[in-house]
Each structure stands twice: as C-alpha cells, then as structure tokens.
Image 1 (spheres, helix red, strand yellow):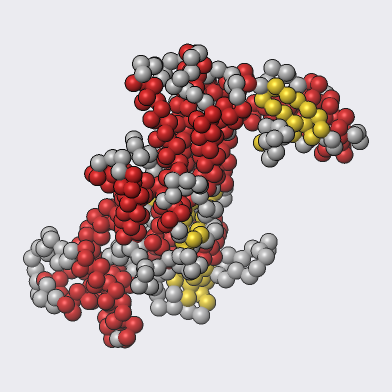
Image 2 (cartoon, helix red, strand yellow):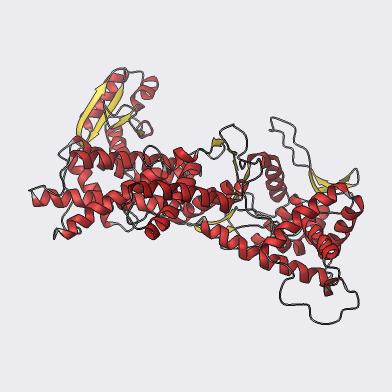
Length: 587
C-alpha cells in the first residue's frame, strides 16, 4: 500500500506532465499551515525559471488538470503555491485500506538487508548505570524500527570482557582469597563449578581493585601480567574469567530485561581475539599497516577531509591490542558469519573519531565491501537539572536499576493519589508507565543532543510524555470496552467520510503513519516517531471530546467512529512497540 503522500504526488506528477511540465516539479509535502491547506506543492515556482513563465500561471494550469475526486479543494495561490485539501471520501477509503492491512499500510522493504546493530556496550563485572541508558534505549528502538520496515536485524550487546579489568579482578581476588585452587600452581583437579563470588561481591571487587591500581604500581603491574596470562590462555585464569562472565551475564540480562531490551547476540571483545593475528598480518601484507614510534598504524586521512585525522593505531608499541583492533576483528567475525549490508553502532558522540577510523580501515583493507553502509550514531548526555551528567544526590553515578525503581515508585505514588485500582495492580501498572516515561523521555530528543532528565515532567500524564501517550491508548481501550459491554460489535462496519474537522484531522494524522516510519528509518531518528504519536494522541483526544461515540444514534456513523479510534489505537500500539514499551489495560 502506497504512502498517502506518494498517492498525491503521483497525481501531481500526472497533472504536471499533462500540462507540459517535467514531473520532477511535482513534489508534495505536508502543509505547515494547516489553516490554509493540508498538502502543498511548490514546484510551479521552480518550473517557472526553466519554462520562463509566471509561476501562478503554471500552478493554475496544473490545478485545472488535477483529478477532482482525490481533492475537496485545489487552489493556486500567488506567487505559485498549489494548496490541496484531500477529499473526505478518498481519505476514508485510505483509512479502510490501512485497517485491512496487517502492517497498517506500510510496504515492507522489497529487498531486505542484513543489518547489525551494535549497542549496549556494557562492561562485565560492573553494574549498569545511567550512562548505559541511552545506548540501550536508542539501540533497541533502532533495531525494532529496522525490523518493522522489513530488514533482517541482529542486535549485539558487544560486551567489554577482555581488558585490564579482568586482570584487576583476578589479582584482587588472589589477594583476598589466596587459598583458592586457581592460585595453587600445584592444583591438578577440576576447578569448582560454582563461582567464588556473587554479583554483589564481584561489583565490589572491581572498583576496589581499580582504585588500588591507581595508587600501587606493583599491584597494577601484577594485574597487567594477569591480563596477559588470561589472554594467553592460562587455564586457571580462564576458569575465573568464565565465572566472571557467568555471574555478570545473569545480572546484565536481568537488568536489560527490566528495560525491555533484548539482544540476539551476547558477544564480547573476547570473541574477536582469535581473528586479530591474521587481520593484523593482512594489514601488513597489503601495505596498509606500518610502524610509527614503535606502534603499528594505518593512515585513514582522505583528501576531502575538512580537518586532519590521525592514523588508526592497530597495535601499541608494547604489543597490546586496542579497542580499534578489537572492533576491526569483530567486523571480520561478523563478515564471516553474517555478511551484513549495514552496520549501525551506538555510542557516546565523543567516540566519533574512533568509529571514523575503524570504518575507514575496514573499507581500505577490504574487510567489508566498498558499498557496505557503516553508520555511527553518537548520542548526547543525559544531564541533571544542573546541566551536568546525571548523578545521585550524593554525587555518585546512579545504578540503572535504581533509576528504574525510582521512576516506578514516583508513578505508583501518582496512581495511588486517585486510588482507582488495587495496590498490586497499581505496582505493575506503575512499572509499565514508568518505563514509558523513561524511554519516551529519552527517545523524544534528537539522538545527538544532550537532554535534561526531569522526573516530574517525564511522569506527567499531560503534555509530550510517555504516560500521556499511554493514557490516550488506555482511553481508547476503555471506549471500546464500553462499546462491547453495550452489545456493539467493535469489528463491524467501515470508516465513513469525516463529517467534522476533528474527525478529518484524526484521519489525516493516522494517514501519516507510513511516511513517519519511512522517514524515521531513513534518518535513524526515533524522535520523529515520538513527535508523531504525540500529535496523533492530541488528535484522538480532540476527536473524543467533540464526538459522542456511545450515544450516536446513527448506527453506521457510530460504527465508523469506533473503527476509526480502533485504527488509531493500532497505530499507537505499533509505534510504542517500535520504541520499546507497552501500554497497560488500565490507568
């Protein structure tokens, strides 16, 4: 099913062509002056320069050629605007086609791509904190959006599980529990199946070890040695590493699940290590990698660069690999396993240079095809009201599970003020609404922008917030339930042409669904979906306030109203599912 803008544009193309003008001038856009028209074409003004005619004359010629059944009003306005209002009959027919389509009229990708979305980026042995929120929330929305439009999408958490933090933990564990078999050089048996720590102990060990390493050079050197031995395959340390991974992954999966975030792959830096030696040798053999001050580097600068870009360091002077090395080896592994057409990476926007280097080396070395689409989505910071990165009241970094808990408790308190549901139901509803507040509050901002975390504003049931969107959905559900209780078949009937301005406005908003989804995917911009569902919710609520659905005496008209709000509900539910949250049954 074509987007409504496509349908209108095709009609304008026909009219331009039949009037003797190039169809390229027939671009149609949504009007930014809905008081004047619903859609607009400004092509006559551009055409006037080429055809040496007055733009208003061209606009009038095109208007006279347009199919009148599609439009209720066609106007040529000086200096050469073509203002359009869609006909109520045509719009109603479009609504019925959307309702009959499983994808609400969205045409899936004709040639599905394989897309890797690299997001999450948590480090094992460390708790998720608010700094992990944006990567998880944005990445999940991008993954779901890409799937909805019809692509094969693989989400990979890409864990930090192979660096110095492993050596630090092993060394600190040895100092605390030297009698463990992992540290007994004479131990010959099977290593214990149960880990020598739980998640709370593990999360205390790492920061303690990290702090000690900054003050104690000997301890740091021991940790570096432990890291090297682990990476070289030393069996006792590999056994500890497996314990760390097992305990950390269980906790990470639980916390990501609380965010309604799911990964297809739980790969880490360790998975890329086997690919590093051959990859480095290949870079040397191709003449791309060379020594500079003892390190192995690859030049990435291009003549078109507006600023100087440093070489990508592949191997440090001491022989150690870096994040770029690991990321390139990960791409080698992904090419072997999936041959992706597109890579999407989510990370702090300060990582832009790193990913520019990695992408350019990957293409120069032929690790990926030249036409592989590689994108870095750099996100801004979630800040407190002071404009600085969000902290706890004590000034520390807040754990993500505590943030989720705090926002759920704030919503619970708001729900209990009205006391319309039982306490247990209110707690579950508060979790659902709290998650919507948290995710919508983040996703409604442009990815690259910093934003202020304002809990009171985010949990408000009014304004451009997640709870307001959910309130609108629940309101529609309530109306449909009342209709069913009254004996009405909410699946019967067709959507009829609108008879009021608010009804038509709602239809126009619903009709924009496919256009918004397509634009959001094209620009990888979930905030466009947020803006759309806010405007759609406003249209739903205006229509509801102005229309007596339950008491409408014309049964066909009543059925039309019911079908229209049901379609709006389906669009809203589809959009919030893409954004990664759900709606409760009651609020």
